[in-house]
Length: 114
Length: 111
Image (tube, rainbow over all chains, first blue to last red; front, side, top):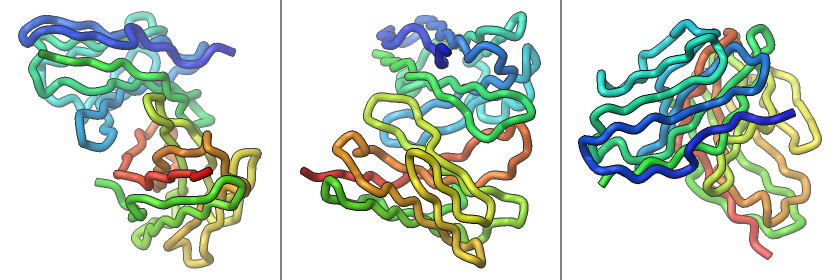
């Protein structure tokens, strides 16, 4: 069974540009989460989808971040315009609804904003 | 904010048991104890979880004190590949709730 995949693995952009991160959850997992770790800080929750619906987006830092999950399969996280403080590693995780013992994390996307 | 306290770092000799402590003195009756780890440059990996009974799986054992205010993760025979940051997280087993990560314990397994 394929795990959670994320694309790209690395992204280097300049301040003010736009970047879109993609997450493909494990097939059949309706829960999808985005987390991020910025330099020197702890892993922080960003938002949670159940299928295509945003269940909790309390962790989204500001309106420069837009997450979507059209069709309830893969998800994208767009940062527009990117700022220096957005640099970090963005993780996606998924889990099955009803058996939420564990969340399976992807390898992350390392974003560097110059 | 994280509801747990862990030592920032620990060392363990290869082949020996690694015992990682965690304090969660304010844990509620419906909160579980979860352990995750993050090996350098990878995503967090689930290890084990428990409510009040001790648990064991192929990766580790989880010992929870009777008052549930602390727990210990045991890696019975640590290898170099177990070098990672280990996170102890308390969380209501409410389907879909996110995890709140603290700074964790950086375990270094030494040859």
